[in-house]
Length: 329
Image 1 (cartoon, rainbow, N blue to C red):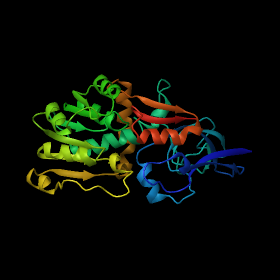
Image 2 (image 1 turned 90 degrees about the horizontal axis):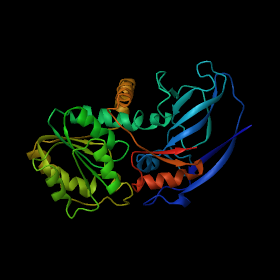
Image 3 (image 1 turned 120 degrees about the vertical axis):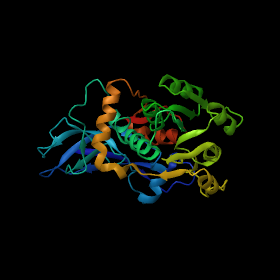
Image 4 (image 1 turned 90 degrees about the vertical axis):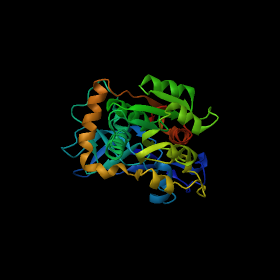
């Protein structure tokens, strides 16, 4: 008998998620049928997208959405022998049964020297988000000046390093001095702590007086209000997220950017990474190669214990992590 533990959403979030919004439940799993696989979660991901998408995709009482790296512990499917590690999207749960259709085994060339949790970060969805969202929308050219906010996070830190590989000058913004040091360590040319500057506009001008060719947007809100006016003509803006606005019950009003888009002839495009699902293998292979070659560095913020899933999620939304936020069971 295997008992699975799962975290459910008691009620839809009102503002910032709170501990009482979550409930831990247990369920006995049935015996495997032919073609089925039993997996146990080893690493689970907490990501910003869970905050807005929980309201769109979930009903109250549902298991929280999310992905994990799971290990096969019992199998009646020859394609998934015991011991194989897979990425799945089964939510915040410790054990689950699959028919294999929604499982993505880790690449066969995955080296033992790399933690398998990277399949949820640098070589997983966040890395692919950075890879395709930056390269396909910003279309960087050598010599471009690139601005990345939330730059010490799972996506932003990879965007900045890819931009450096493409010969760009990279400016990053983050919310602590430790994060700024991390950005400098991984090659950002300029970085500033947005919580300590007197004026975002002045900080951005100081970092790049000539303006910005590319802007990778993770924050939205007032940061965007300050950044868009400093775009160069024909600049490209890739909108990946707006984490500063996810908890707003009423969207704030702000400056209108349409005149700037018009007269600077900017291109601003939002995206969901699944747009490039048919190219994920390509992106994953390149990211893995860059990591092994030392061209892309990573950092993980590990929270141990499945019981701490809500704490890890809420902390990530508050910016407590540097690099990818991971829960280790």
